[in-house]
Length: 189
Image (cartoon, rainbow, N blue to C red; front, side, top):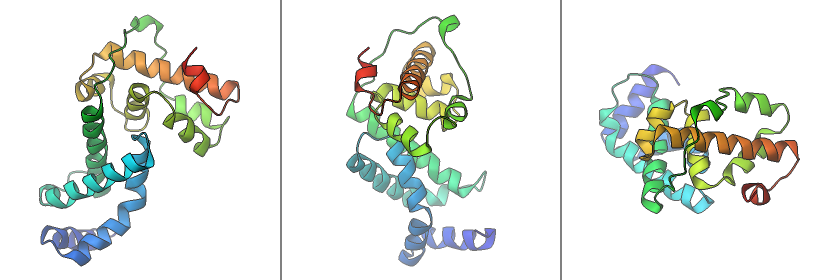
């Protein structure tokens, strides 16, 4: 989108112009729903998060400072809405953290496994991870947050963040290596 038309769209949304709000919604709805779905345990939860997120976008659009991309700003609101819903829904089970020497922090985990599995299949497997693993995995792998940031956002220790990421990766790797499309039996082992 051109900067001028993006500026006009933002200006219209600040003025609560329904036409501008509708255009903004249509422009970003598919991508932002995908973000919400990635952090949700069901389609209904993703829809709730998505709608709450867009309300926050419209309520706070006047605060967009044009530091970074507008799409990135909207995405952060959606991720934060999902995190807020997650924190309200359940308190994270703080797992015993494992020693840093035993945590494999391979930063290219997703890239490495995409050659072995279709992206849609991977997303399906990620959706089935236990909530605490899925949340940390998504924040680390897809949002690029560091363990300290994840720990602060989720109210857990850095060690728990590292442990949850390691365990999520282990579950996904095992599922991919054994060609299992369901994680239930892997999570239980």
